[in-house]
Image (tube, rainbow, N blue to C red; front, side, top):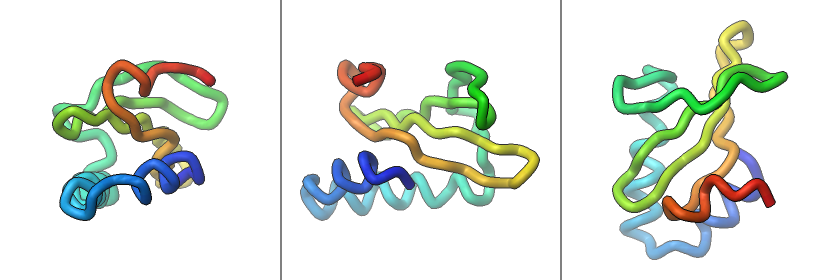
Length: 83
């Protein structure tokens, strides 16, 4: 998980943080669930969006290395900001 994603989770209420973390743990078993949406291809792999209530997680799947990297978590309108 990126530092930006960890910092965002640390600021949330405990029950919301636990809900998001539980959903993200599912990605270890099924990296591309049916409700994930493909965003773009990157140098590192494929980027997807995963909806968790009012929040969105952007993550990269590195298929060759079998790695799922959570890049960013935020509320819907802000998650796509590149800054």
